[in-house]
Image 1 (cartoon, rainbow, N blue to C red):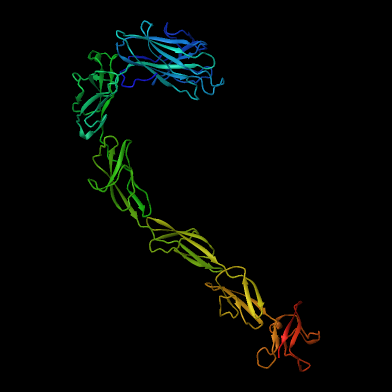
Image 2 (image 1 turned 90 degrees about the vertical axis):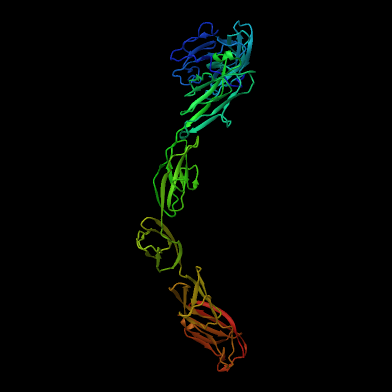
Length: 599
């Protein structure tokens, strides 16, 4: 099995099995199978425009353009053997031919009976006496597919001396049953010759000519590959549509110069191994086709309109051209600089006029004129996003910050002034617009929280302040002098107001605090420093009791609900250096410990 490796001639025999909605039989002597007027069972055939039986693929025939086209439908017999034959006459002796046919397995791959029996067809070419086999070939097993798959098979053979007719046979190599069901269509016989190409002086196999370059003429050369023919005789032909051909009288050489052409024209040569066969289409083949294609000059591109945009807008210039035409952009109406090739759009970056030129894909034909398209960029307001802070319980002014006098404003709060006053954290946006363009400014606003006092403690003579939150805090116990340190040292006991604020905020938070501490020692020596055991600040508590004892538990000093000061005397006499014990009760809370009296 195989196809002609070179060029073929026009078909000398074609069988398409006709058209129609009724099933018809083959001529007598064409088949050994029985005709079925409806659906063909095993060993039967029909010629039909439908294949909707036995769960087969229901498909149209293969012939292009057919309406209700028929194909030969064969349901294999239970024994293998011949199912189709036809005689073909009008051949030439000692000539190579290609027989081909299209075939499809009608049993779907997902049929209820499974994979099914594959189709397998043998093609045989016999002489007209049916005694000499000239060529044969097998398709091999062709299994069912999920969708119908028409496939073409071919066989090449050479006629014998003195032989002008042959017999084509088709045999089924398989047997009937579930499967081996096929349809055949478009049986064709045609001559098989060398591969023959036509080229111009530039070795092109076709040429595109721009309309404005007409009339046009070129020299063509035919070249065979000598695979089948040992000698070559030519007849040049021309056509206006590539379908209907006429001989060019007297043009039989390898080269041909076309007349001046004003329309698309097709050329080919009939090729024969013997000059007498040039006039017999059953004995010659044809070359590849050389097309001189006239390309109409394109119209200038159609503008999609001038562009008016803001500076930050990337809308391109654009034009429209039909299929098969590309656009090149230039800086001038004539000549100028090529700015961009092969694009219907152009991204301009400056104000001005730009020019679009049409060019055909085939032939590179250029439009007579270029299309002018302009672009104008409008200035946009200049704004800058901001990140701002404001103090708790205060408000802040937000500014659109634009230097355009005619600008309009639209905040996401609904306000339309250049400045707004807000007292809530969040993201604020304002659209700033001039006469033509608008831009959005984003302001991210966060709140600086006031300090929250968690505790104030007396640690010895120091006051230590802690907060629940963090920040750039300042601390004070006077209300006018602030420090960043949260510890105040060497502070006399007493009633204090604790003040706190944020570094950059005005609001102050405060709380009252009684600073009270118990001295570890005192030195009643009259030098003015630590001369007494004083409990400063105790007088600010509502209920107090202070008791001082010596090491033997003797009560030396007692005070209740009053300031407390002891000079180290008992019964008018100086007590000696020693440790002394205290019991202090403040608002029901008891403190015990000892201190030292030093002389």
